[in-house]
Each structure stands twice: as C-alpha cells, then as structure tokens.
Length: 431
Image (cartoon, rainbow, N blue to C red; front, side, top):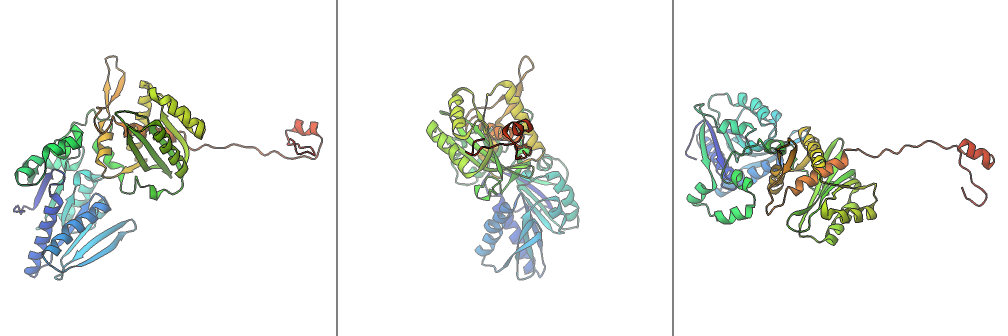
C-alpha cells in the first residue's frame, strides 16, 4: 500500500489479501483524484467473468461502502461475448472489471490491475496487447498472483532484475507473522498435496519438466461454464470411470461434445464407496445424459464392475480398459493432445482437480519404456486424471454411424423375393 511505484508486482499466498489490498489502493487513488478535482481511470483484468465480479463486489464496492462513498454501478456489454462491470464516482472517476484477453487488454488507456495474472489464458499475448496501452506517462500497472508454474508471463516478470519493477512477496509464513489468523499446520494437513502446498502457500516455482500436464496447459482449458450439469444441452456424452474401493477415489467423468470440443459436465468423486453405490452412481449418469460410450478401468477389481455395467447398459456402450503400460501411454497421449489442441474444457478454479491433473508424471524406465507415476495421497492417485483420459478415449472413435441400404418390396412370390434380396411376408405376417 505504501509503494507508489509506477510498475509494481506482488506474489501472495492464497487468501492472504492480494485482491483486497490491490482494490483498496485503486479506491484510494480514485478518491484522492476526486478530492483534487481530477478523474482517474482504472481497469481490472481478471482471469474470467466470475473473478472480475468478485474483484468488483468483494473489493471495490466493499471499500467504497466502508468509506460511505456514493457511486453508480453499471453492467455493460464490452462485446458480444464479454460483460464488463463498472463503478463510476461522482467526480467522473471510473473503475471497470472484466475478463482478460488480448482484445480487452487492447481496448483501454488507463491504469491497470492484472488480477491472478499467472492464471490468465494466453498471458504472453495479453501482455503484448496491454503494455503499449499503459505507455502514457503517469499510468500505473499492478500485477498480482499466486504462482502457476514457470511457463507464463507472470513468472518472467516476477523473476526479472534491474528492469524498473518493484517486487513484493508474501508467503503464508510472512502473512501469519504479520497477524493473519491462520493455523499453518492445519492448512498443510488439509491441503494433502505437497505440490499444492508448495505452490499456493509457500510460493515455490515448481519444476514442470516431469509433469505430464503442466499448470499452463491445465489453465488454458479451464472455463467457468465447465463442470456444471445444469448447462447440459442434450448432446452426445462420453464417460470415463476410474474404479477404486479403498484408499483411492472412485471417479466418474462426464464430457459432452459441443461441436468438436469436449465440455466437462460433471465430475463425481467418492471415497470408499461400495460397489453397489458405484453401480447406482453410474446408472444415474446413464439416466441423465445421452451416453454414447463409456470407458471403465477394468484392471484388478474393475473386472466385475465392467461386466455388470455391460450387462445393464450394453457391451456396445461400455468398454473395459486394462491399465497396461501400453494402454496407459495411449490414454495419456490422447488426453494430453486434447489439452494441447484446446479440444476440451474443464472446471475453473478447482484446486483439487488442478493438483490431480498436475500430479501425473512421465518417467523413463531402465529399458527406455515410459511409465506414468502419481504420488498417492489423501486426494487420490491421479484418479480424476485417468477418468478424464478414459472419457477422452471413449470419444476418440467418434459417434457411431449407422449404415443402411434400402430394401424394395416386390409383389412377387417368395423365391423371387429372396433371390432379389427384398422383404417378403406371408398372410400370417411372418417374414
């Protein structure tokens, strides 16, 4: 708050006040300008519409109301696909919050706050579009985020030196030492994932070299509308099921094909679910969605659930997949290609899912054969990841095409009809 540098960047642990503090600076800057008879213009670029709304409602408006300052609030269509939230003060100062993309970044000449910048899709393209916009002397740029691996523009900015940027770091230990009421050990145990704790709370730059799906790749396919069953449009669905009975998670992943993109509609996770419960959950999915194909983990204890599902829903719709080394390589490769080609959409802001997807690592054995490993912890054994890959595999064959040829009916005797391949029926209605 006391740093008035033109270019300022801060890396905070989760829930340690980065948006609260940054939006307070914006409000104070606008009120100071109004008191001096000037106008200030600020734009908050967030990773998505939901985050932009949170920054406005839980930051800007919260501070203005606490200070008992009047303001007018608007919701406007920035373009056909983007809504912008805006607050206007009596003296004409304005604060706008909207989702970040290269077009929205290019559309303003204003002071800018990049909120959770490490998680923005196309962060490098956004940066290229944005920086010329704030080149006017006196305009301020604020960048805040938790880390999200090394493959994004936030990492480049945060690790730079002697480039005119003022840098700040607040990890969980610093925040608690400064008075934030948090139980560190309770949080660490509750996180249940060393990578998640290291990145989200200790602000470590994780080594992405062995991760099969790095955080930037995961982030690129996140969408606020994914993972919401109520948005199912009735289209064809493909399902992946990872079987578990004891320590790991039982997971059902449902993808709906919308055009050529697989939208996650629902992820069902259960721990220590009985086989009867698992059967009931899968039956419910088949009842609520138009499932064309379902791929299930048939390894070990999966033999009976697969056989039972085939009996209930048909062997043409339910396929068992043995998790051999070759099959796992095929599943993982198909799954990663869907992420790289942006042919899938997954729920945004789900930390457990992000950690699960990032957990899978590819290692090379002594014979040169690739293997996929994932540490087992309280949140599973990359079970959501394998369920997703199974759903992707289910969709890989595309929709079933029914081929047919017309059979012409003839008024002729039975022998001629059979010779010509036509249908024939006697007076009793028997073909």
